[in-house]
Length: 134
Image (cartoon, rainbow, N blue to C red):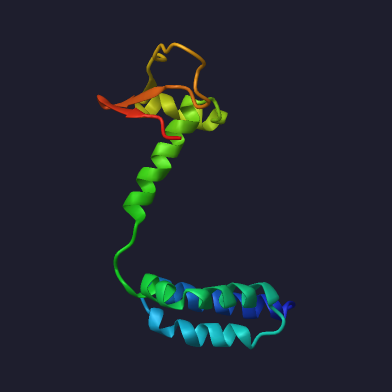
């Protein structure tokens, strides 16, 4: 990085942002945004910092408070994976993993009239049925 001063400055800003994130120091965010705004050679990082200003209170709270939505996001990710599996949009890797997770696809329910766009698959995980989400 000694040959590229822009990378050195970028790495410094990224490290300081990561430090704020991992040590819950959101109160330092305005200082970080100001420091990034002063670097003319990093327009993309400046735009990122300017977008943080739009919701400064929310971003500061996210960088300060110990609570997060990681568990909820994990469930959403799992449900999306099931949906991709059920509707044939999964890649080979995801389908290969399906065999080890115990996820099975049950039969289609019969309906009179045209089939809805997303179909009517139901996934079974550990005995619990989940209707596919649209």
